[in-house]
Image (cartoon, rainbow, N blue to C red; front, side):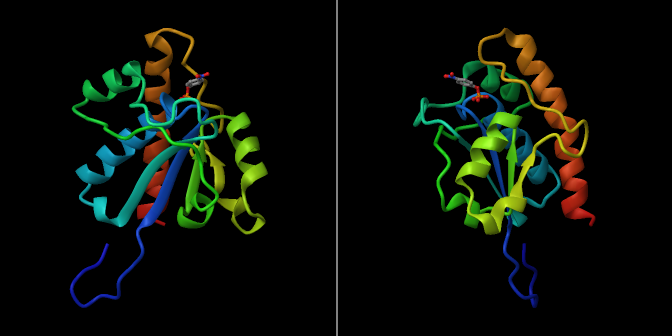
Length: 161
Ligand code: 4NP
């Protein structure tokens, strides 16, 4: 975010990561994009999501994630992609949904960037956002509530350090 007369400041890069990048991490991406736009700080951030696996590369988010977002007026068009080595350089925060994601990310992360890999729910419960893929819509609602609270926590840290 820059203002007239100020030195250009790099946006804060936030990458949400889950396994398939169709359920949890795109939900987090959509919820975060909506928040920063509502707060008028959208230009201060670069927000994306990725998967540790490539099973769903190129696909839109799962219908159940899109329904959760659409119910809040959030239209997410991002498509699944796998994490890339350069992501660890480009993004400042790499927020994983569960412990398996953290483990997989840490295995690929250059040592200098390991501090960026964190659990997405760190500011609240510090627990995992449980994989909802094989369950019903309930799992997605639980994910939504947990991410909602944690994203507020991250924004408090980033906007009001
Ligand atoms: P996500 O959920 O990691 O939250 O996107 C999953 C999506 C797909 C699969 C597993 C989890 N899958 O096995 O295809």
